[in-house]
Length: 91
Image (cartoon, rainbow, N blue to C red; front, side, top):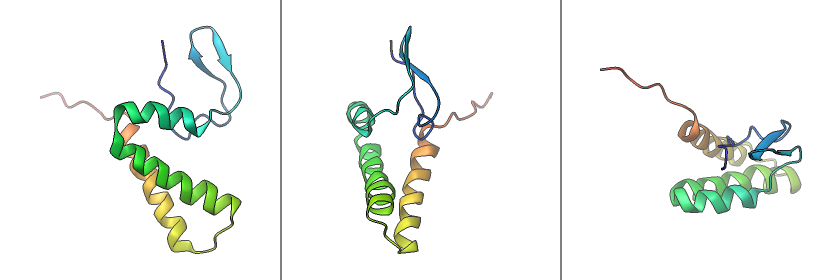
């Protein structure tokens, strides 16, 4: 049984992947890509873009172009809006 692990929330919190199995290390981006590929290809593309811009280019390569970094954050916000809980209207 898999528990839903929200994107960007896994870095420093211990989480349960399987019942009774405590993981305190970071989860690989491949875990998210593999699971997202099964659910939503469009969101997978957005995740890939955000990861490339913010983590690889922004952190490791040290890009200084604020517009590119902003685009990476815009993509991250799309992901957050897609996975966050939305209130259910009672009509």
